[in-house]
Image: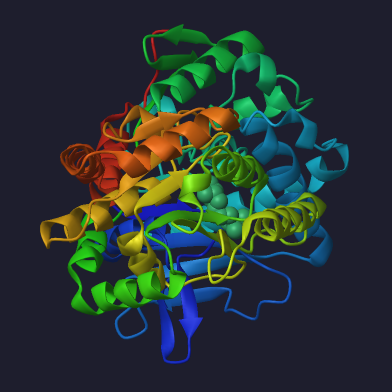
Amino acid sequence: MPLVLLANRAPIRQTPTGWEAALGGLASALLPVLEDRGGAWVAMREPEDGAPLMQPYPEASPTFTVHRVPLEEEEFKDYYNGMSNQVLWPLAHYLVNHVAPERAFRGAYRAVNRRFAEAALAAAAEVSSAPPATSGASGDADPVQFWIQDYHLMLVPELIRQRRPGARIGHFWHIPWPAPEVFRILPSARELLRGMLGADLVGFHTDGDAENFRESARDLVGATVEGHDVLWEGRRVRAERHPIGIDVEKFEAFGHDAHIAQEADTFRREIFADHIVLGIDRLDYTKGLLLRLEAFERFLESYPEMHGHVAMFQIATPSRTGIPAYAQLKRKVEQAVGRINGRFAEGAWTPIHYRYRAYTQQELAALYRAADVALVTPLRDGMNLVAHEFGAISGAAMDDGAQPGVLILSELAGASDYLDGAVCVNPYDTDGLARVLRAAIDLPLAEKRRRLSLVREAVRGLDVHAWAARFLDRLGESQPVASSQ
Ligand code: G6P
């Protein structure tokens, strides 16, 4: 059965030698599925981007098509920078002070969602020779499945449902779903919910997120909740946990790679410290960077014996640079790094090494391998795959005789529901984080091993290919017909 995928970002990127799969788990998990089943991937095209609007892929022997929805400058600002990333993003992460008024952005968000839906419907018409079922109640199976990704496209399920009532429509929500009392802050909360309830299956990373969604549907639009299902307009919408993971085989291979091991050794020599504490994040206020830096400052104040022995290496990848809050955060992080280094650096030892740029996956793999401790302390996170990547690489390297790393993980990240073996912290508790870091450095080797093995087992259990297969199987099981409502 062909698949039409919709995501804000395209799954392929242009390199000097041609087009290839974009980095990131979603593309690596879903491209093989599309290549196997045929269909389309619908994504936005940013204003200055000259990428083709319709692009058969892979180039050599195409099996599916990438469709791009071209956005004008204003539209991009309002739909992407505005509604998606200054309203929905901070709200879902409970950072209500960051939420901008949605009024100016709503129109563009609706219009872009509509264009995504139109593009998906056109793509579906191309790939399915059989005509779509005209009525959901007929029980005829629509020959195409639709799978929508994330918070950029909340209205799309309903828009597709109106035109292909018998279609199987899935939506995966990659970020937290807040408590109904927080979600209802949005003036368009009901419209957005009704949009998503056009789906048959809505997936989340955790039970808590799925429950918040069901309760939002019950409290805000009056839907009936029955177990994990939401009964809505004569249909049954399953809202359940489908935790994502990483491409485990690929990341474990990085952990065993001799060249990467060498790079890790070189890096350790250059850093000039006995213990390396690693942070890898997009430069985003949800990632808890400022509080993490404060906690490290507290650590240096409280444990002077650690001076000269511990260094933090923090990568902040540029992200959403058109949004003022991100530019402000960049300045504040730079100030904090400057303040802490100015206060504590001695001789050849620098307490914090800070890099503001994107790294390749191989470069990151060497850092993961070299790290003694990974600090993953978001203020909220849907899942957080940095934690998974560290577990896979450090775990594989441990098999080859490398020192096991310790994962310090925010209890407010979805990953903390799964990665037993991580040391969990509250990212707002800077004193607690300083103490936990001190303890992590001194953990006995056997305990480090035990914990890392647990993390790694959990990471293996959440492989991204299995995630995609499970979600699509579940979508296939959903009833295109009426519920008992
Ligand atoms: C989060 C979202 C993704 C998004 C990614 C990067 O993980 O859930 O949908 O693609 O951030 O953000 P960006 O705005 O660059 O796509």
